[in-house]
Length: 278
Length: 240
Image 1 (cartoon, rainbow over the protein chains, first blue to last red):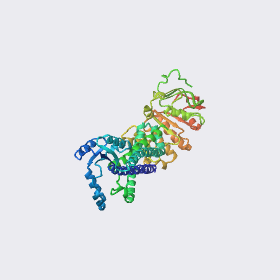
Image 2 (image 1 turned 90 degrees about the vertical axis):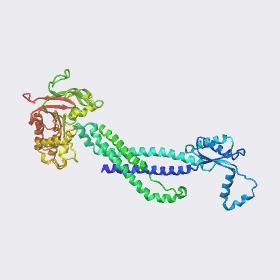
Image 3 (image 1 turned 45 degrees about the vertical axis):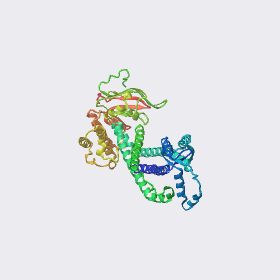
Image 4 (image 1 turned 60 degrees about the vertical axis):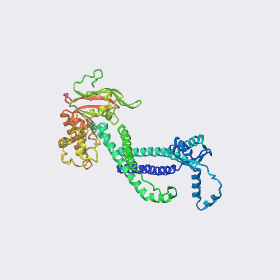
């Protein structure tokens, strides 16, 4: 009975940890997708000739924090603008000269997705000869950087709290199981059993209970994902686009079950050490 | 009463020797006070005294469940006070212990309960089964070996506990009120088994309130009162 309670407790606790990991991995995936859209635009001075443009782009591409740099000449910028205007493109017919500046479009590497990283890259670009002005490609770049930082902090904080809570709950549950068998421990010690002789079966039991709890958590998580994943994907289609919510990978699944085993052994070790002292 | 304090080497074949042993659980309150005694090989001694006199404390000291606050204890030649925690199991394997409440595991069969004492020393299963069968036969319970202890009477349960205590052929047997829960007829049956162990060479210490039992067996009697050993009466003729 106490074994079933221990397995259920470990299962429910790890389910919560796993659900958090699942949300986190999907959020990270989503932010990574957005991250690929983090761009800066370095507008070129008029002095940069079309011939020198690719060299400037190459120079920018070599800066730390730049994933990719693409030269967009004045003509290419106008052509792009024309396409964007679509049916209204006729408005441009009256222009005597091309008013759009040439630029280098910079795709920011993930290492520089933080506010500080973006600021340093912006400064480095602004210092370059041939760069007149640096603009954020999107207004949400700063917000994105804050969201990533917040998510990472929340992941570490909440993960630590959940992990500790899981360990305490599991230790206390297994302590009850050990307490229920304190007579057995006492008798074994009386007939001359060594501490390891007494402890090893409890540790093995803890390991099995932990692994069973981990498998239970995985099953609950899988069922929950099947039941809710489709609905969530529909609800968040406007941000996810065509991306489907993803379940934990093989490493994540194995990690959850292994975490159950580790929790079971640690919980048993703590409880048995107390039982042997009593 | 013998005073062995000055000469720990005396006592010849004594398996249990206490030198001015005191035990205190609370400052200023003594469960045992300045107790010195020895028990020789094959000796059967009764430990008597009112409740709270220190009988259980003395027995716990002998099987190394407690350490003395003062004094020295030699058990089977080992100084119990200097015994490392890792050495305690080795000592306990040479000491059988029987309690008033039997201390059997209800979820294990009679055979498994007795085999526990052999499991912990790593006796192979086949050999253990044979030894358990022989031991259960000695206490008259071989036909109940696959039963749960819960299906047995009090006397039968105590016989199982004695079988567990003796199956490893211990050099010392400690019995704390082994007949406290049994009627007079069963009491004699159990005491015959315990006395039989002494006859085979095991040193036996039996704590009891039962004066009739003590008189009937006519063995050495150690009397404790308020933690002190107030009497040590040996049988006439100096027998064991």
